[in-house]
Length: 390
Image (cartoon, rainbow, N blue to C red; front, top):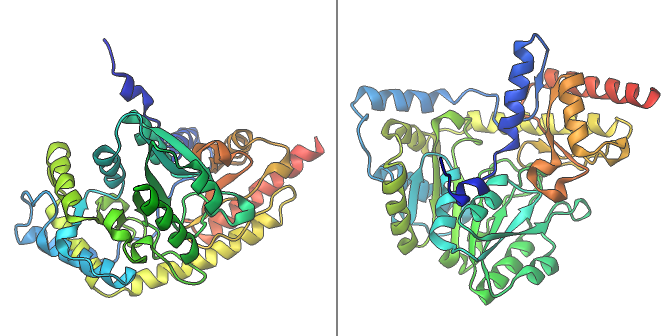
């Protein structure tokens, strides 16, 4: 049997690969602490669950419009308008089963074979994977530790060629926790406007900022004319299994996204969208408590990592990932991650799972209890001490 060349270009995601390996070790009786997966360990807030259950009981279990139910689009437009400080109308909003389909849809709709897409590196793997899938070239812009894992604006400008069609932003960033400044965003938009580029702004961690305020490129005057501003319910509201994402974009582009949805998944679950409406419009106390706890965990894991010989870790400004430099251990990123999983029972991700510029780094998710985080750090310290004394 034959397979297309494009399907061979798709890459997997390291978090799911490591999860499978960790589960296999657990089935063998090994204790594993999971710091590899980007999933809040909190329950979905009760008011959201109640709203979805009520919707099911009221018969909201049938097809919805491909762009999302009107109430969900209205709630998302209100939310984006308030949090980005701009005017977004429901006709600009699309709801999809998760935020990830927006990455796929944006590249499918806007990037041709032979085009170039500038992507952050280290960065979320689907950006480069989907660009390669459509026959485009992902061009990495390096996120350097000494620059707080932000874009170097001069380097970004130097990467733009006549073939460049899109730049992908992710702030706060997975895996680094880096956050782009208003000055960064203004400079990126100016370059995008000058060279007629689309901007795909992945803002799924927009509420998880611990110092200062979140800033969106959508807030830059004029930027929404060429921007897909995507967010979702998974990270902020602990709703990963609900599969709910939303994005604002120019109205004409939204029409193409509707058509992609019809040809791909038809519609997003109706009752889930009623949960989304409640999440965006209802009380936020559970979210606030979750963010406070993530802030506390961040400080603990960073302090513990910096106490381990051979490891240094900058304090991430957002998301829920620590991205320490492990070059002082003498191990490569892959060697470190494999050793931690198989010998220490700590599941984490090699920095190279996020691109070649992730070499020398490891991603730890602190979406786990303080008790488990401290136990994991203790296991790592003990194992590395044993490596040095052998």
